[in-house]
Amino acid sequence: TTGLTISSNVGFVDVEEVRFTNKKIGTNGNDDLLTLASGELTITGNVNMTGNLKLASTKFTVAASSGNTYVDGELTVNRATSLQETLEVTGETTMLADLKMSKTAAALTHT
Image (tube, rainbow, N blue to C red; front, side, top):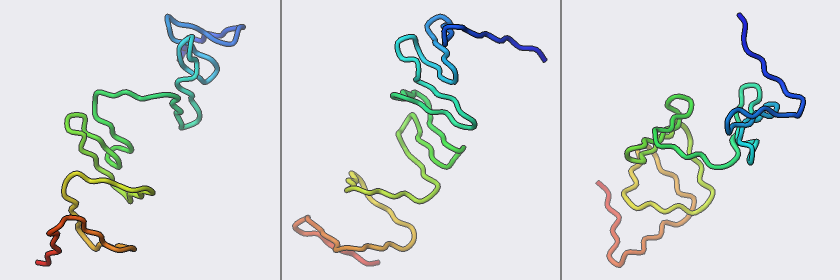
């Protein structure tokens, strides 16, 4: 098979408003938005999406329509976490510190 090879003696190639520099792709004002390596893509800056996000097919997904997130693995959170709705746990729950309930008439119910 044959292909098209484009090279430059000034270090980059501009096609319309897209700049190619070695293994980097960007614009003429920000030439390293994407960096390619063997089996790896590095993104510098923000990623704005309007569709669903899927990593490793189904390992981590975010539905664009609802924001619902699925994690197929262990989730580690190193800082305080706020939940606005119910926390539902299937399986054992291990708490390594005190349980604090701040509602005046809080109840702990066992069924």
